[in-house]
Image: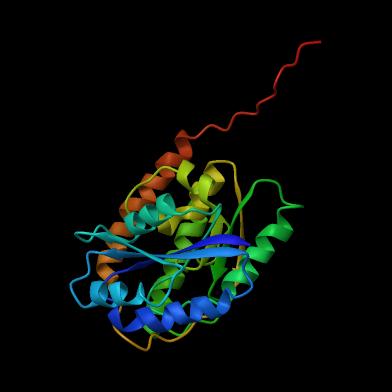
Length: 243
């Protein structure tokens, strides 16, 4: 397994070192890997902690946005900078379990043999440790999105995903695109599998997303993705050879 692990963070100073240590423990059998943290314009001690962490974790790379550009841009920055063909993403708050990364990669490699154009295995938090309101709002959003986009994905909000770097970079980029990756992949002719993953309570810090902010942004983005789907045309290509 050769894989780049991309972790976008904004004001997550207390979660950085514990999560890096977990990633290192999870990846001890990997052939080669790197951990790419993207500091998305943090104004706490995130930059200081990451600079100190560079001295202790040789596989760590740190990229900084001078101002906050959002999670999608942070992920896109990390994927573009990655050295390996496979990407794993996870949230920087510690709620995703890095121990799931090797398993998701194994599922992707195994299923690629039977599922043509498998581009991604997406984590599915089937047992979540969040507030009742967040669970309710997420369930409603996932239901509406799935019915309108037909992406057959129960949990696009899970930050833990494993996918092809090159295929990801072929997708149209826009703010908040990370919430619609399965639909964008299907639009491009790829396939996505969902796999149950571990989910944990947040132990440090607080969520950076407000419910109303996500609602209005989600409605606008959903309409945009529907438009993209309607404008897409997948060509069946045959190469003609000289007799």
